[in-house]
Image 1 (spheres, rainbow, N blue to C red):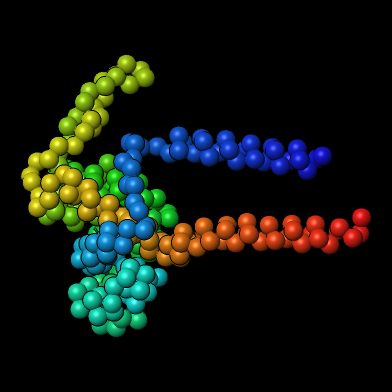
Image 2 (cartoon, rainbow, N blue to C red):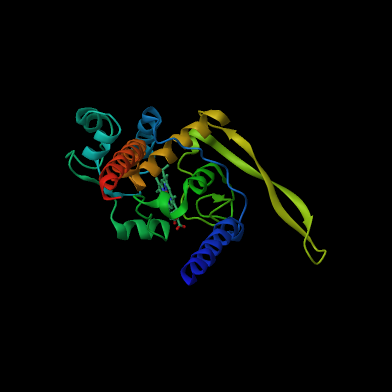
Length: 250
Ligand code: HEC
């Protein structure tokens, strides 16, 4: 009986925690990435963006080009000829050519490895991060970010998105003082893509980062239904067997 009470208490605590957790995180609301790991074309576009725009600074040292090629349905030649800039061996991991000490000197903070960043930050955070760089002349990079204040990372996708400027709104805080807050971001210079195209491109990129954080997940999602089916069939067989054996005992 005690055990049941304990289980209920633990379950209740877990439920409260799950419900309260999102409310505890501070900062502006996140946009929803709505990534789809089953969409191979999206993952391939994400890989292309990643190798072109991110690998120059960030590594993904736990991912091998050969594995990525296989998982994403690309041939090794396709990856080697179009997407490998920092190495010439398909079996290598996604390292970066820049030296850590140089990176530190240039940016103040070395760009972290991105292999499992999607697990650390979550897809929605990454999506919002890449959408909300805005002009801020007080920063060395000329930009700031809504979800990662004073980030040392430049707006590396500016060519695609263009630049955005903040539109401030004035609000009263709890003590009645007027404070300025960024209400929204507005395009200031156009990029190669329009807003929707850019959102889709970032969704592809985040999709790839999510895949990279847990490559086995794609396989798990494919296998899951079969495992359940097996368990159901096995249970039916086991039940029949039990009936059969116990028939004579009784
Ligand atoms: C010019 C170099 C450079 C490029 C290119 C670059 N980044 Fe960064 N990135 C940085 C630096 C430096 C930081 C560290 C920021 C900090 O800690 O203030 C960073 C931080 C990040 C973070 C936050 C990590 C954390 O602390 O949680 C993410 C996510 C990220 N980058 C994603 C990307 C993606 C995706 C791309 C490709 C579109 C990219 N970066 C391209 C330099 C770069």
